[in-house]
Image 1 (tube, one colour):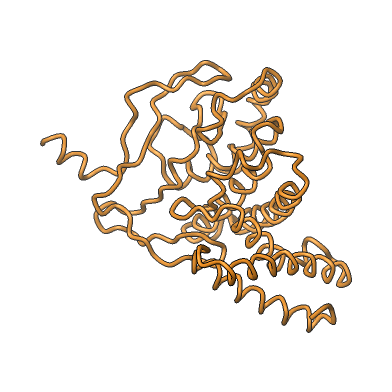
Image 2 (image 1 turned 90 degrees about the vertical axis):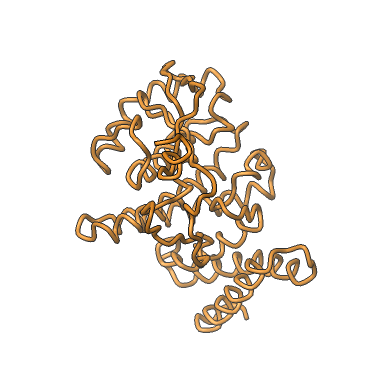
Length: 292
């Protein structure tokens, strides 16, 4: 079989150059996805800005998210490629010291993992959980907060899919917990966009939250409002606190909606989804006796 014919049957390939782990010095060949060839069949855009993909008859399940995070197969250090080597000595030491805890944590959730194997749904989910864990130990120079937000929502998507495949294991509880974490971290990210305590521009190229459209900071504003509405009961148990929480998110959303109407450069889908979400906010706040 020719090399071209063999490639036409595969989803991914291994990079020729080795990637060295800055934590434990392990070398591995990073797996990357082939482009084109009818591998991806794009479906609709979900309300949480996830691009859904249809199952491919030839290749089966295909997700570009599987290949985004660089993960060391030995110590399970995980990061976006841009940040792989951008470690100061304190970050490096903290991540190295947490290796055993990191492995124990991920195996309790997903079982033993082997990142020398080809990526699939379990390794994809693990890559983002590990990313959240490692960015927790990173300094402000790499803008860890917005990157944790992206990892959290992508991990929630994976656990949603895992729950569909294995409905009796309890992955839905992990999914909901991750969505709630994403809600909180997107709120923090919004504050950082305003106060400048982290260089959030460092994350602009990977805010996504998915890989087909990078909605950037507009996506942060939208997702903060979407997730706040979805998890208002968990984020603020008291009704009066919910009204304050929702009112704050609505005001930020209103600015995004206003800028979308005023600018022809704003992507149509997010403007329309923002309008629909804004209307939902008005209805909820009116029902709760809050601002209209």
